[in-house]
Image 1 (spheres, rainbow, N blue to C red):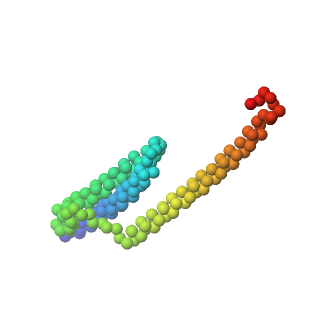
Image 2 (cartoon, rainbow, N blue to C red):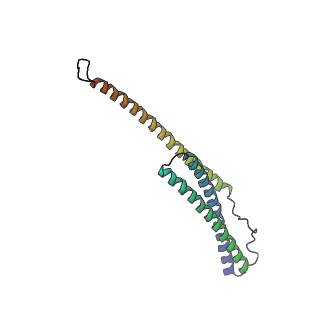
Image 3 (cartoon, helix red, strand yellow):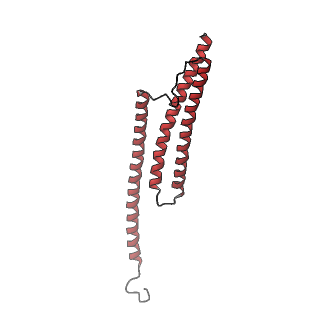
Amino acid sequence: MSDLLGQVVAQLRSTIDRLDAIAVQAARAASDVTEGHTRYVTVGRGTDHPRLRAAVGQSRTGADKARRIARLSSDAARNVADFLNVIAPGSAPRPAAAPSGLPGGDDLLTDSDRRDHARDRARGWVTRSLRKADDLKEHATSATDKTQKLIKGLRPREWCTTCP
């Protein structure tokens, strides 16, 4: 194999690996978005809130598009491998319909850490929101009590014969 052909083969193998990695990440993203979509559907039962309905539709679209990216990336990797085998036979052995490119241990660890961090941030946001809702409830209850006392204080006294 000439030096130039060797460089082309190396570049095409690198391209195949990157396309496979994209396919794996897109498939993982599709499963995450599908899980979120399921939760949006569960939360949205019995409501017609427009923002929630929009979130349900957008999450469904996002999952579909992520699956499409995964499929197209996998197909592209397969096509590049086929081309590579035409110009340099046997240089890209690939199983018939199985994408290679399973994530390595470091990738899984990094992805797991990223997901844990995202869950912690979401948990913190939910906790703060609940605390704010509780504070708002207390303020509303306090304001209602004070308003009722004020109204009772402003009611006409028994000395007024024309007042109800």
